[in-house]
Image (cartoon, rainbow, N blue to C red):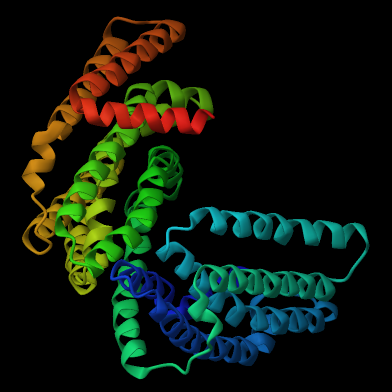
Length: 455
C-alpha cells in the first residue's frame, strides 16, 4: 500500500482542481456544469491513473525480485499482489474526483459516511483473510473490490445530488487544460511542503548526531499535532472560498476570512499554550528526563511557530481558491533555499535549539507572507482582522504561556502543584479569550453551535 500511495501522486492535483472548479460553478448557480467538469476530470485522472498503473506493472517484477528482499518462493506471489495493486491506482485516483465534487458542495458528512467504513474494512479484510488462512492475493483482490464498490457509491451519491452527472460527457480540452495548470501548481506546493517539514530532522542527523533526531522529533511532533485543527479548517474553507470567488462575493469572503482566522486561533492557541507550559513535565513523564533536558526548548520554540502557522491555512486556502495558486507555489520555492541556508547555519552553530529557532521562524514567516499576499492580491483587509480581537487573543495566549512557564520553573516544585496551576491559568486564558477576543455576536454564535452539537 505504500507503493500505491506513491503512485497516487500521478493525479497531479486534479482532485483539488475538481473541488475548485465545481465549487465556482455552484457559486455562480451553474449546477448543470458540474457533470461536464466532473467527467473532464475523470477522463484526465483516468488517463493519468492508467499511466501510473502501467508504470507499476512494468516495475512489478523488479520491485518483487530486487527491492523487497523476498525469498524466491514469495516473489511470484509478490508480483501478483503488485499487479492487483496496480489495478487499484486508477480506482483511487478517479475516486478523488468524485470526492472533490462532494467537497465542493460541502457535503462532508457524505464523505465521512464513505471514508470511515472504507478505512475500517481496508484493515479488517486482511485480518479476516488471515483468520481464514487466505493467501495474500485473494486478500488484496477483496480490498480492490471494496474500493471499486466505494467508487460506485461516490458516483451514485454525486449523481443524486447533481443530476447533470448522469449525462456522461466527453472531456473538454479547455477545461482540462485549466485544471491541469491549477493542479500542477498545487502539486508543486504539495511536494515542497513535506520537504520543508522534515528537512530539520535530516540536517540534525547529518550535522549534530543521529541520536539527537529522536530528542528533536519527539518534542516537535507533539506540538505539530496541533496543526490537525487548522488543516481540517483549511479543507473546508477552500471550497467555500472557491464558491464565493465564483460569484465575486468579496464582502462575504472577507467576513469568512476574518471569522475563520479568529476561531482557529481560539481553538489552537490554548492547546499550544498548554504544550508550551507543560513541555518539561510532559516530556519527562512520557519519554524520560533526557528527552525533557534536550527537548523542552525545542518544543516551546516550535509551539510558538505552530501558533502563528495555524492561522496561515486561511490565507493559504484563499489564495489557491481565488486563482493565486502559482504565487503560493513560487513563494514556497523561494522560501526553500532561504530556509535551508538558515537552518544549516543555526543547526551547525547551536544544535537542536538552532534548528528549532529556524523551524519556528519559518512557520511564523509562512503566516506573514501568506497574510501579506492575501491583503495585496486578494484584497483582504488583514489589519482589520487583527483589530477585531485577534491581537488581544495573541497577547492573551502569549502572556499566559510565558507567565505560567516562569512560575512553574521558579516557584512550584511539585508536579501536582504545577499541574494545578497550569490548569487554572488555562481556564483564565479561555475566559479571557471569551470575554476579550470574541464580540457579543460571536459569543452567541458559539452558544448556538454548542447547543446544536449537544443535542
